[in-house]
Image (tube, rainbow, N blue to C red; front, side):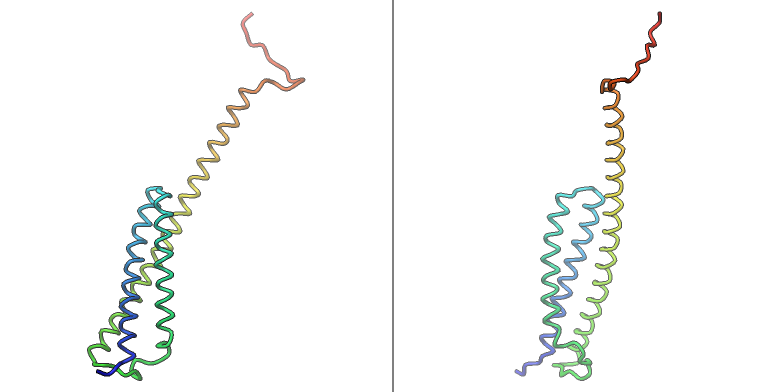
Length: 150
């Protein structure tokens, strides 16, 4: 049986689609964790996502030799394989767009959560400062007002 380089192209595209599908699913979970404020699990998920991104980068490097070659110029095992390869490439583009959109949404949600926490911390800090000022004795030379009934 003849070896067709396009068979490898098809397998690389299938691997890329699988990787992008997993990244999409992880992105959905990431949004849930951000929304729920579960930063511990979020960090664990980000480690897994990083591994998936590294795998995607390896697949992209494997695809490099095929870039720039028009599909019509390639030698295909059959028209069916050529069509399946085109379908895989299209699915990869759609998945990548979805993943990128989710990443932007996740970043915006995480920024909003960060700002909310900063606002609450600032309020708590001000409340602590006010409480502390009532607990501290007056400094030297400070006047005290006696408001007792007399």
